[in-house]
Image (cartoon, rainbow, N blue to C red):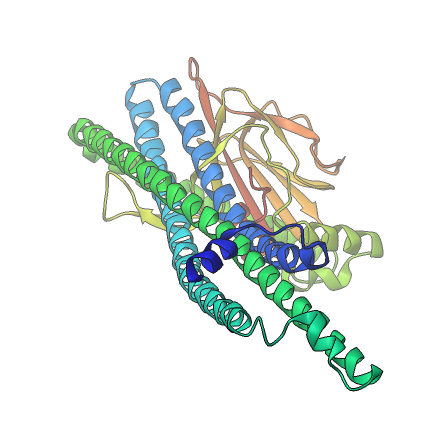
Length: 418
């Protein structure tokens, strides 16, 4: 009898149409919950894809870098950036693995809980059938109903049998629904375990690539050590030029504010309604501004960065970001504004300073500038080209964003993620 009951409980009794809802609703709720979790997973996957795209772009620029002394420095910088990118990628993969581990743990606990619930439900149903079997003579429907004293009692006895039958059907439907839901969880658990193995394999591959890049970086460092004194002097000179440029930009911003009888920090109060609209729109587009070049990767990061790959005692201090792009790339404005100055310092190429209400953008290392002071520009309007050394296949644009005259902002946080 017990074996018969257990076999009966394994059947998918879809013929109980009134109880389909017991099967559909739990599965639907579970899939809905899984969809919400998938959205979080999708964010992690997008981060991983972006890191892979950045690495691929850096690889292309590395392949185009020549082996001259200056290009060796550029290659060293690209390798350093690629190490950062690989670390980001591996961290992203690790975050996905941790996420999948949590999913596996939650699903495993759910499988155990649901299995115990099903076994309990089966045991209760088996007891119900066993009780009905033992009392089959006593509770013969027809005899029991006809032996009633009057019509009302006969009706109550008939309703009892109907309710008892409905209760049994409901129990079977609930068991079937729980089994269906359990199978969904088991299938998803298997999928998550397979996904974890895939991520672990990818993690191993990318870690091996990272070690290869580090080895290549060490090779380039050793190659350049013979010119260490000369390169150090070049780096110190370059830092002085950048400091001078930063001071010049601050003076130009202060001069622009002085025209309105105010200071850079209070410039917003002196803006016209139209200028305030531009300023507010610029601020509102944080994280969505177009890149100042169509193609490129960030190879110099904002602020006080990691030690120089060749000189560990020197740290860079960048008021903006460096974008490595293709040779002769066209430079374009990232937002509507007004050109308020064009200049340059000795030994450097031109820069263009554009006002956007209370914000400023700076485009440095330009040639063939096509705008002049006072020009009104629209988003993505071309303003010149990036200076490119003769025979080179890559070039570097220096890009800055300022709020007022003292606060240099991190442009990476303002540009659209690619």
